[in-house]
Image (cartoon, rainbow, N blue to C red; front, side, top):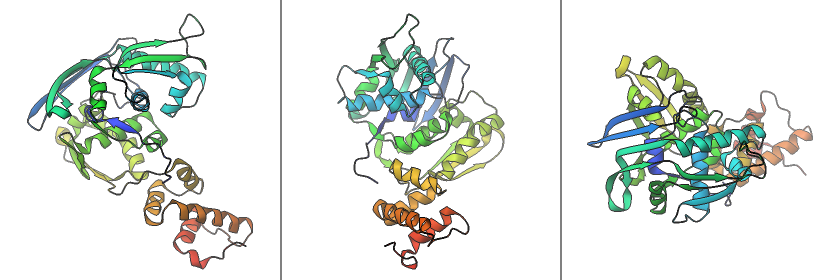
Length: 348
């Protein structure tokens, strides 16, 4: 992993409670979830304007970007931020096109107009207390526009203020690391949202320095946690199937097991304990050879990035010179060279 890799964070209340519905599209204007956690009754509600629906999908990318923008701005006490639309789109990991300018405005409007209420579940960590909180993720929002319709373009500047509860929590240090490069490399908004929810669920809210390697949850309760608008077990399983498959394939989850029947079904998540954040350039290069992410991360842990980069350069040179001929696949040939370096000549 390169030393200049930026460190990203997530606010622990937001990742634990999950205020963004883990679906690609939403058509509901509110949700209301009540559950018991460590002897406490927690109730979380969201009310949105009918024209926008509840925050969902790509809104998760925007909230993660805004949290890290606020931290990069050295956490101003008033919670204010200012950023160009182009820079915020880059933080979201999106392409800088007109389509995403329009998407960004809609996401910001949704996060500004939707109201949240958390009863007994918002952690005031410095005081060791559970509090009640009511807020909009973005409490105030202003932006410049080239026309009267308010469309975003290359010159749009956005300013706003994050909710006081979020600001106080971040400034108190109630945050956890977030591998945003990995998150943004995931293929679908619902997979990115589920990754963020799972990564937050691994932390004990009262002892945030501790992480678990397994997590077992009731299927119906987990749908509430993910804000999936269904109570039908089959629908919930189908909504989660694709994200589960990708997170296993990409090496974040070791396994996902469903047991039981009907509303008593349980999901058991087994996390890859040694999950290693990777430099995005190294990750892209591995993919170009067809090497799976999980295998690449294992190689990073075993031999380190410098040796891997050197081996890939050597592999390319040997292929170009015709000394090395790939018989099965580039991925298999490259891994064999990495694991058996002395069996191959060094290019002159």
